[in-house]
Amino acid sequence: MNPILILTLVAVLSATTALAATPGVIVRTDIPFGNAANVRVQQDRAVTEVRFTPDPHGGPECLWFCFRVCRPDSGGGALGQVRLVLECPETMLGGGKPADFRPVFRPAGGDWERTGAPELIELPDGRRQAAWTLDAATPSLDFALAFPYGRDDVEQLVRQTGRYWHVDTIGVSQGGRPLLRLSNDYGRAKGNRPGLYLMTRQHSGEVSGSWVLDGVLRRFAELGDAAPLVWAVPFGNIDGVEQGDYGKDNFPYDVNRAWGNPPMRHETLVFQQDMRRWAQRCRPVAGFDFHSPGASESEGIYAFVHASEKLSDVAKRATEWAAAMGEALGPEFAAAKFTRSGDYASRWNTPRFGGFCQEDMKIPGVSFETPYGLIRKTVMTREIYREAGRRIADALVTKIKSMNQEADKK
Ligand SMILES: [Zn+2]
Image 1 (cartoon, rainbow, N blue to C red):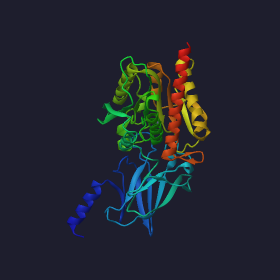
Image 2: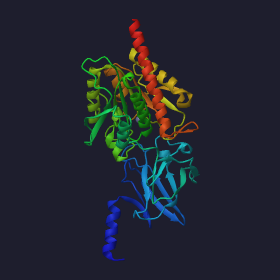
Image 3: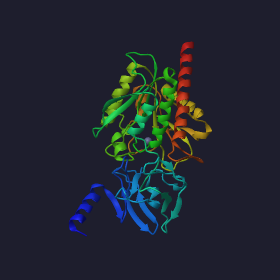
């Protein structure tokens, strides 16, 4: 080969951050939310095998992955059979049961779909692997732990709900990216409309939390004036979202452990200011935070309540709010043990969103954990996540109504 051509080829490959290559097929992580490590591509006659492990991106935990298998020249033919082998699943947070993983894939120009159950492989030393074989009729195929959710999805939500939601920038992240907040009403000084403050993606890879919140916000848009005043942060850790980080317990500080006074991250400084502004412009009722649990958890949605002040009135109310949400979600969605204490062992025992709600704002603070792939036998689709969100929204409206009725009686 002409030496100039070889040099050009090397330059092109390094510019696209191709992680591994065999003649004709590469894996790219420079796509939205891209994440994969230790990627190796092998071709065995008609099958392209891609081995990978989720990249911790410098944090102590790994979980999220998302990458593209493609031909380097877009004019290339179909990929054909691709076998994707997830190595070291036990090193993912909660990844001990890879049989319950149901990643998603997307052929070029198509939409995301779920895979089926994996083929489980046990190595001679006891390590396990999970593999999926897909048939790609296109020159590229994206593969991710679960349906990604990013800025485009928020834009779509805003468009499809007829601009019911305002989108404002309330500050910037540690990395200088805009922090967005959606609202259906700015309220007014000393306003009396009951208000909710909603949050998701403080742990940036927790996409199922986003899809549930998406359903909550769509339902509130349908309810219009019958909905409470709602302010919602779609990306608590936008740097992590855009960098493809999992972002749980990540350095220098997990966003959801940085809610103290003074706050330990710029993001939480921004959110605390915004929550104080919100509290001045409505009648603050509660704060809710939407998360995802361990990678292979499949027993259903559950709630954490901040219980460090077990006997306080606000902690009791938080438990009641959580119970009402569990009832509304019903046995199709709710885990058998729905309400749990969020005071599990953590690398940082510093304040979380729920603690800030309850101790500083004196309102209940509840977080929800929604599995990535399965709720028992049900394979979670975006519509099913949204249905869970709709049920939560309706339950919030009912609970606020009953609070108002009780207040009227007094
Ligand atoms: Zn989380």
